[in-house]
Image (cartoon, rainbow, N blue to C red; front, side, top):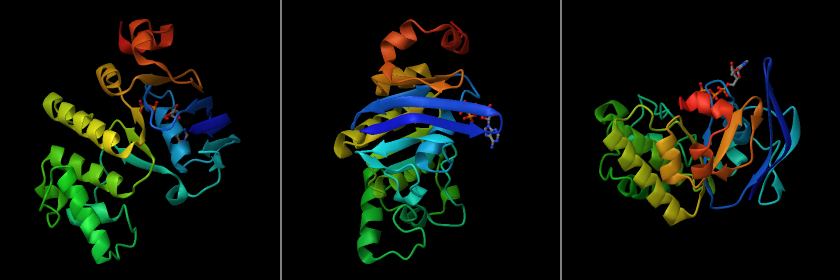
Length: 231
Ligand SMILES: Nc1ncnc2c1ncn2[C@@H]1O[C@H](COP(=O)(O)OP(=O)(O)OP(=O)(O)O)[C@@H](O)[C@H]1O
């Protein structure tokens, strides 16, 4: 279980507060207006932003001050963060060893992950030699090899067309079924939240609310969310 206890994060003159739990294995969307603090929340969970006060716990272990690499969370951002001068296999390998000294076992793990996301034999290519959707798959492979119990996706497929996006959401769902990982997914698309995430955290007015039933929240949104959704 992920637990945020009395969390307060400050970025410049922006304040975000959060106090909630997410059960292990849950699939939770994070939605809310632009500038509401969704990325701030993920940044704090991943250890890129310090807390002003409060604690973050995973499975009853306090990770508030743990460095990013020691946290139980793997992140995937919208632009995938593939390094253009590294091969696809090297980019995926970064998820195992940031220094890129991979053993034969590590290389086998990378190959297995690439096959799993539908990119068998493409490890030697550079990212520019992949389509946008294939780049997204490579980035997902890097998340997979990290074998973290918590996966955070920050608007991962916003740049993809509807068919590709749908395919990627299915792939994420399959990977979660296999690994049992917990998902936190920032999305501006209510349809993605409905499809993949039974529960949703609303981030608005300086607060990340506890996960609520996605369908109920989207069918009957509070005023701030209503304005954002344009309903
Ligand atoms: N480095 C920073 N320094 C100061 N303020 C910041 C910084 N980064 C973000 N902010 C502010 O923090 C607030 C929350 O930003 P954040 O990126 O978390 O929102 P978001 O909900 O992810 O927005 P979007 O949906 O547009 O990506 C905004 O008011 C933003 O201006």
